[in-house]
Image (cartoon, rainbow, N blue to C red):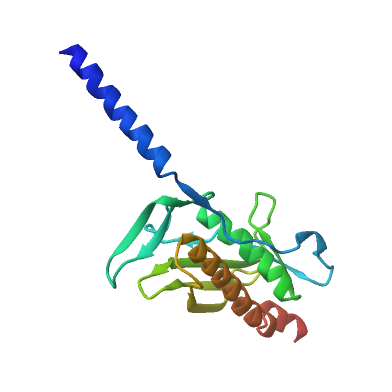
Length: 202
């Protein structure tokens, strides 16, 4: 009996190993091709603390998400993120905001940041491919001033058509979508004054 169990276990392990070799996992990173070495903070720029992007629970996973129908989503088993998705999006948005506006100097939240800073919070409910052949990103962003008062709150829904089929094209389209969110936020950051700034000038 023990002998048969040993043989069976060997067959199962060999099958799993063989399956892994035949169908390896593909790992992806969002495109982040900004020339960071050319960027430097200027004294006139106000610090803006970008908090880690918050993801809905079904997005907070290593698997790349694909929306199969209006009500069904699929978590890819062999196509996954190589790093935390929240971490990737946060870093990409920080770089995007540094390039697309000059009013603020965005930085990621860290232990040295004091409370009295302008804050940007972003949450996502969709970050996936769709059955229509698009990449889809949905969520909202909120800007708080140095006194933790609400300045702007905006919702967004961005769709980017895939240039070809496959997860590589999906990741590229999602990367483009993050840049578009950065552009949208930058426009609002440039034109909207906080209450603190208005009171100072008054």
